[in-house]
Image 1 (cartoon, one colour):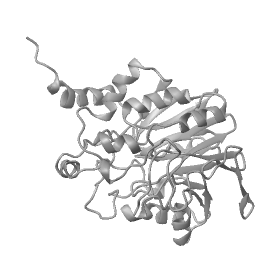
Image 2 (tube, one colour):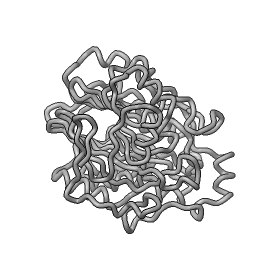
Image 3 (cartoon, one colour):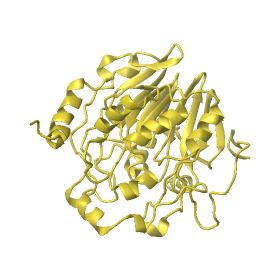
Length: 363
């Protein structure tokens, strides 16, 4: 057991250090790590000239939402893996990225959709939750700005990232897999993810840990997956909770290149499979439409998800805009503001532009 001031971190009964191999962090046994053998020069060439879809995302103005309810449980999707959770008078933001690029250099991986709010317009942030060290999840500009605006904010991060953030000069709670921290009425548990961390290239592979987080508040459960491929840790989370997960912001891409991405990311079909394992009551897709992180797939992520979800139902799927939100009402996360929902016309446009040209011509 370790402590940060009066905050105590406790180990679950399932705690183990088997993902520490003495030199670096690894995935749980049986879950392979991505390596240079999974990447080829053709994939890099394709990424340079055939990047993932870059159509701007539908966006909702969320700046006035915080004047309406001071005691509520709500979940906004800001962009990419950046969520804002309101837990009564406390606010948690995940993997904040408000920068115009998701890479070490400004000309790489440029933003294609604007943020629905500025950091200055956000409510007071109490906690920042970081899942891993990749540039689209641990963004120094966003951390620096948010901490300047919220000097009493505490960052929660896995081993490695936590030490880096501490070097930046910020207060941080550092967690390992299967550890838990109680923050008043909020309980945050760090769980595995199937991913990797290599912020500064291959030589730093596995220096930092990657993680997912379960947030419990009163009767509501929210599972923030971070970046992850499919794996047994989903069942571990479900078994720990002992009932269906109330809400899962669900990453659905990138799809390609498949040989690499399936070791570190969910594709839309696997996202639906994950939701089935978790028995998620409500899910909304994230990690799509903000940055071109992969090569161009045959069909856009969101179209594949909507088609597959109809075949393999895994709880309720609500597709919200950047800036859209759900609210926990009468024991369930619900759409309470129709402007949060992506209009059907967006899907029709995606279908006409990307799917219809690939269909065989009628004879």
